[in-house]
Length: 221
Ligand SMILES: [Ca+2]
Ligand SMILES: [Ca+2]
Image (cartoon, rainbow, N blue to C red; front, top):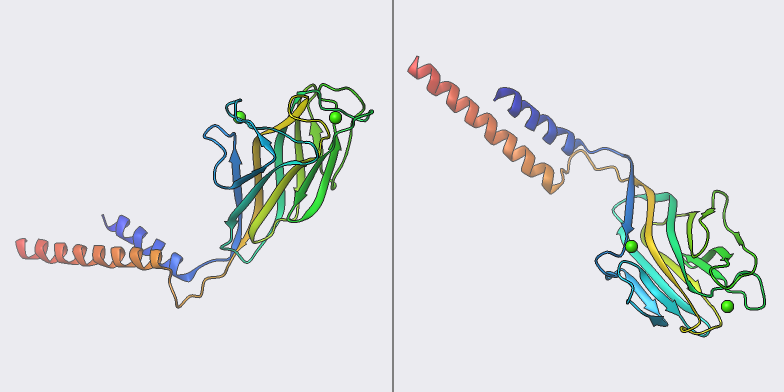
């Protein structure tokens, strides 16, 4: 019992003192439970295929945008990494007469472009920051792109300005995940967080109970 109370008090004190450090924020979805409120979809959207985002297609610009607001309680963020599966439906083209290009726009800047033969033939290629990888074949690619994460809102726009319409070609997304390293703020030693107060009150209450129990034991002896 004594050891337990000591443990509670130690936790309360360390929480009150605060600490600076790095932590990793992460987000992932396999679209198993729908799109979720973080996603905004433009152009055609057909959710007939369960567990994916899409199919998406239009004559000019189809896009899906993920807006994440959770990287917020920190002093800075960096080392972002985005991974997603790109799905092709019917006849998306690589480099040929009717090339289709995927543009990935993160926080307003185009960081990745690629063209892939996903049923329509043609050649393939992509460009992205150092560390970008593309694997897979046929109508599935897994793409990983490093990016500069920011505090607050991070926005990822998957833009596929394909020229043919929905009946001819479309794309989809699956298994989207991203992570960012966040640097936690320093908490002042004189102002414990509400959670720390609760722990301290619990700890002090426990000490009082222990003292009362000891007095009772002495009287009985
Ligand atoms: Ca899925
Ligand atoms: Ca095309």
